[in-house]
Image (cartoon, rainbow, N blue to C red; front, side):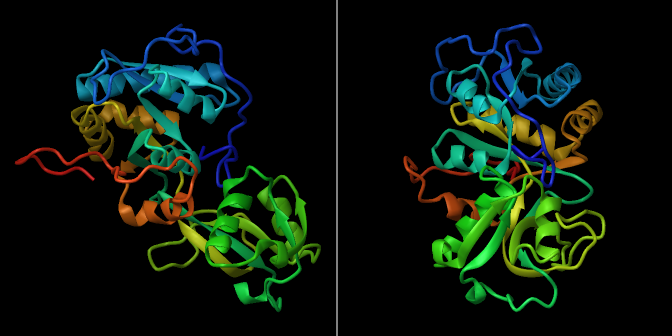
Length: 321
């Protein structure tokens, strides 16, 4: 569940949900919390999937377990679209949100959130976004991108359009000259079919790499088991991010991060597995977030001088993340 597509995972997101899992109407406009505050209750927000009833039930269980693990009062709320999580966070209704990478990093650059944890699934928490061609194609490097037929997923697809184009642009590739014709096919499989069947010269998708940079045998790439040639890539990209409202106090940020990353609370581990399909969590690092941060660094309204990470705890406590 990493974004508007599940590519690697997907979620069907439509419009703002009317009620949270605890009965509060999502969208009521209370005053926002003061900076660096500890809310009387920690509001956790997630985007609902095609089974809102089950998602809300699992969110309740996650909130209860997180409350037990941190000693905080935790409640949950669900919305139908990730963008509404940012709106609710800005209004002070939510303090901890589960976001796809582009939205999380955009909100970080805009000084709205602090990334706390990244879910780990089957041993990985990141993937690579790639531009690929068919085996044997004369298109081998970015220098071969000139007047080509490109296949994309859709204009809102992070893995199938946005990230790789931003990466190419950052490398000085003139996109209008690189791609003479473009088609939007809706799925990663359809993009792979178009490239491998000769209907497109290049396409955008995702791949999981192991520690040695080799395609992982445990995770399916956007083109499945078929062979492709990677022309360009961008990453590592976090699959998704649990982020906190920056106005939440540093101590609460550390409490939540420690509970998720250290994984000592059995009920919280089970609840995270059920809600987020997460086997565990890792703390974000500069190395992992830098690729996206660099691509988003020129965003309008970006602010400088803020930290991507929770402030370190005071000595002699051990630093988290």
